[in-house]
View 1 (cartoon, rainbow, N blue to C red):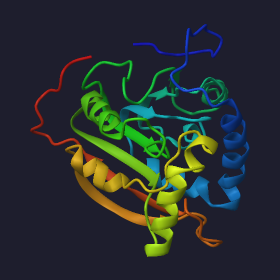
View 2: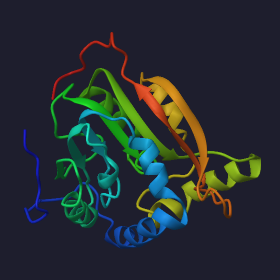
View 3: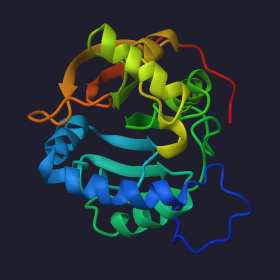
View 4: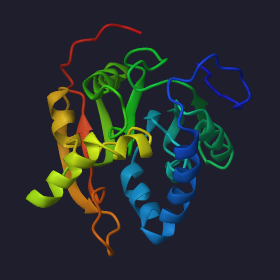
Length: 233
């Protein structure tokens, strides 16, 4: 199956359209690679992966150069057109084949049980329907397949969690491409039927001011081996 995109194809309507946020995110994410240690986090997130991988919400493709050579193919889904175009360029510099395609997390344009691993990297905060997005991730992953996740979410003491909720109900999602600060990605993965593996808290930046978006989780989960097939796609 080929999903390789040149970024020049015409798409009637993108499911996500945040051009101003996309421009800001591109600048901030590139700076964070060294200043916040994100390059090292990406190495830890993707180390040891093998086979076919789907990355949901690939953004501007900064993960691509961190995939190990044991990965046979990456299908990278990105709904925002400007970020997708950046991802297409980034794919040219990857050491593994990367196919960039439009699509949203709640309706992945791929067949069921076709992937050995799912990568979720700073995407669950911004999906419109979190349970549905994780149901889709489970659908496309083969039984026994692995989820690698690096996500930010709720954390800190009472004052910080209150601040996160207030921001989520007011200015933060409109300014940040529908990002939410108070979601709990680990609990959401568990509720979606994944088996949680090792994970740990990571503060971003590791050495710097604590912000509402600083509380991250880096870890692994699996689709249960005995999982019955979900409705096909």
